[in-house]
Length: 597
Image (cartoon, rainbow, N blue to C red; front, side, top):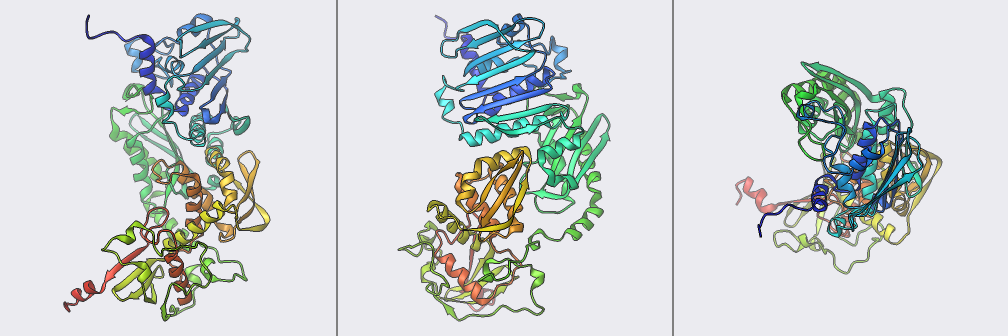
């Protein structure tokens, strides 16, 4: 018997599914691409449990005839290419003929389709038996595909799926992305019986971009238009508005959503002359002759290769630079905007402590000098700690011999360095504490304890805040509602992508709400985020926004209180995002610099 054998077709399909179908969002991507290629003007996506239980995509496209529908479930069966030459002239999103059979091999798959000229056909596929049953059905022109119990027959793959909320957010991002280059078409997403994304046809491309990114981007959108040789770069970039991550950057090549390093690097180079914090929103459409780009690089069709990547890079970089006004004008814009860290509103009057009421640095009196304080002990707290701890420090870092034991610290606050770092004179040397991240750690523990005890502390707003977000962002906030309430927000969806906020945590300034929500969305959508749990994301983002800022003068009492509260925190050495809080400079090292040792 030969050792090499041909694999059965059902096993081949499952192997192919490992490349094409990674998660529910992959299924939605493939089905939405087919609907777009079929000319659908209305595309509905229905989900249950983040797509793990059900994904249903309905469209009013051209549909398929009886024989075509049966062939569509065979591997490498497609209507979009016929020969080798067609592969170099691909004008459709799909062309490989792998998606439908791959999806059908790892789910309970049902297809109902009709061209409108004849009776509809319904085909059911059972992944456990490999059987396919077809029968007549009733349907208008178009196609409905239902995918139930994804990876039911591949339990090892199912275990690697993320939470239902995470999968749901990924799907919303996919649908929103594919809606961008098609403003004349309508897209809708329904999750567990509730409509979460409703994108009606838009009159212009600019209007569709605003639908996806949010109304806040409208005043900042600048048009990209550049042509270098056979490459045309068009789209929009935000001038003067930046985000904490690249979640609002979308790149398309001939209408195909792609992830490409050339385009990402060119966009960053084009925007880096405008040295604001964060990343601009970029919606970029690259038009290029099909024979100059290879789209058959990966089964998922999200990677491309350009024949002349240099020309593409120049077109994109120059297009963004022109849209932003050039480096010289960008520098003037930077000076006019001022550093983001200084844009901190003052606290309401009557606040019991200025420590938790951020003030602008330029509000400090002329010739300001921080007050010095005598030796402080851990017992010198202005208010009792929220946590009762038997050990002063439980952090593993504290156990290292190379680091001093914070519980044994006796020191004197001698001032601030650059209005950002608390300077302490200790028996072993100087200690610098980053006031922003130290307060961030204190607040993080406070919010986490409140959420765990279901005891939020809120301040009621006289007039509710209406926060309008983009389509993908609204899906994130929708999934975070309960945890936001646990830390002090009274927040609910008002209409469409608008949320009404009636109260906020007591430490958060009203004008900082927008910035906090953007940070939370960034932390949730950024795959590089090390935070694993929803509550941690909410508490960390909120603490970062509510904490006192750098370039903020503190009195001696405030510095002593913040330091004492830091000693009582769960980890005085690092903030929730992993940034260091304390730096020690040994007295021995200082004397060595002056040749005293």
